[in-house]
Amino acid sequence: MTRFAYVNGRYETQRSASVSIEDRGYQFADGVYEVIALWNSCPIDLLGHMDRLERSMAEVKFPNPPSRTALKVIAQELVRLNRMGTGILYVQINRGAAPRNHPFPGDHINCSVVMTVRHGLGPSATEFQDGVGLKVEEDLRWLRRDIKTIGLLPNVLTKQAAKSVGAFEALLVNPDGTVTEASTANIWLVGADGILVTRPLGPEVLGGITRARVMALAKDAGRKVREATFTLDEVLSAREVFLTGTTTFVLPVSKIDETLISNGYPGEVACDLRDRYLTFLNSHNKETSWYVG
Ligand code: PLP
Image (spheres, rainbow, N blue to C red):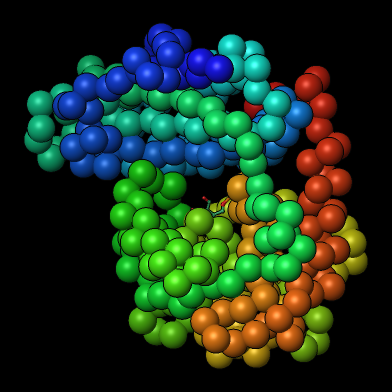
């Protein structure tokens, strides 16, 4: 089936869609993005994604960011054109196209806006049921990981390092020995006291939309959550470890390098939250899920 993309005001077939070679996204990775889950044609946590996108655009000082209402209309049309059921919506906004020069090109340049979709979403049934393995890697990224920029080379390199040894994800560790997150997901542990722990928000991690949602679901279920930094040793000796992310949902971790977590099986808390998250996905409907404030 032909796939349609949106590029700077036009809906085009994905094959023919293109951007300028002077686009600053291409030249400088001067752009930000969002990946939004579509579940039964409903966007998941759209409001949270729009909030984060606006924040990213403000942090990198785009002078004319597109409005969330305009972005929503484009997204709805793309979902319709592509007959999207379950998959992802990718939104990328760059500072625009201008002759290559490091300083901002000026307020007269409009942002470039690209949206694409892809069918299919979520971990495989085996990954969900058996849990996944992680490979420990040094966190090589810049100091503003809270901004969701398209400058993802460290994420690419660490994810590839994980893949090359058959692991699902890279577990990123700062030079100070504290764990930050995974290359495309946030990380959580369950301590011996049963309390869930994840790194506090700040410049060292991306504020995951799924992280926030799972935190709310866990608290609703009566679980205690603590936001704190933790070391690799603490992760390796945790009762349970799991990942959260738009494309990973809640995913139990059963192995980190050669160390088995929860004896190599998905933990009870992770499985419970995984199921609660699936219930949350199924609770969406087309009338309310497009609300952007
Ligand atoms: N951390 C990083 C580095 C990510 O790239 C992502 C998602 O792509 C996440 C965390 C999870 O964020 P979200 O739940 O918003 O998908």
